Image (cartoon, rainbow, N blue to C red; front, side, top):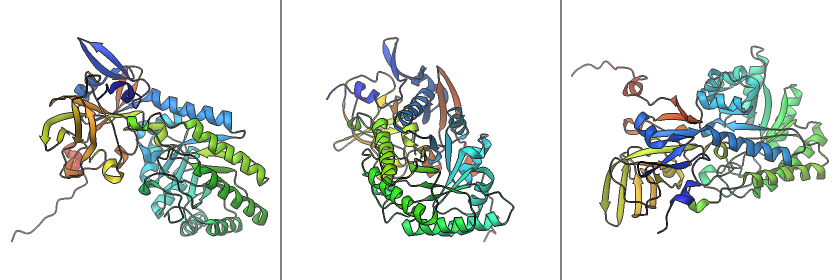
Length: 448
């Protein structure tokens, strides 16, 4: 077994280093010692490195500037992880924010984001979602014809001014990712087929609705951008047909997001954002030329590839247990704060926080404290010999973990800390036991 540190450090935020102190090496991120942070804030602990977030945005921005000869923009997908501080950060980077439902809209509004920068998504928006969208969002992406009828009714009530509307196309193409994170295939629950899109365009034109965009999304965490070519061609061919027959053409085309990242050293090198953007931009430019269409404003919606690598989870080992052919490192978090492995087999890596470069001691299984056999974060990972009380850091923990977290077994969601130029700031406090019962109501039962 080889020294793990060089390849595994590539999975961590861009500011990650090892600092030598008192004869030991300590992992640091954003100029902050992780052992100090774990001791100060407790574990489980989630860290977000601002420099990594900013770097990822700039990589996308540079690619769009060099590859797309028309206007473009970036939307942060709030479902990856959203809190007030992350919402505020999106505005510091001049990003739009994609929200799903009234809950995320309320976070965005509380963070002071103006409606023009908020996009409302959702496959089955409730009346409350739509009303909140009319009040707080600048754009609503219409998923289906039933939803469009609800939007028309709200618009005709004259109580709310109608935001800009986009239509969500289901192109019928697949990307190579887990079945649970594919969204563009023919059998997907998301979006509308070509005939429904045409019907929606005609209905919006007849009602003089502010229809200005077309959106599609193929899936999440894919590494091969080639399927985008077919989806873009399907979208542009449909738009050429609609333009010829109905005279409508969108100001904005959104090709979604979902570009993957490296979670494990076996996934390295990191999937190239430039390659992803090159296929996207070249396909649109070529397709518009072939169909004699003007270049639309291109709006992309990355979530995971902006935020996942910026996040790191720190856990403390409570016990080391050996069973037949397995060494278990039992952690103080797992399924409740990160259900991704249980949901779709997500694969992670890890390093000790102190002396991360020490030699492997054999294979290890890293598992949590919850009453499920599926509460395993990492299987069969070469790891050093570790003892109870030590901390381990799991990289690439910034997307879809906290946003999917739960209170299973009474777990309290962890503290989340923002790292910026040597300083750390709490952006979400740890839940308390009082938080767990705040929504409950006492039931007065008669004693038999």
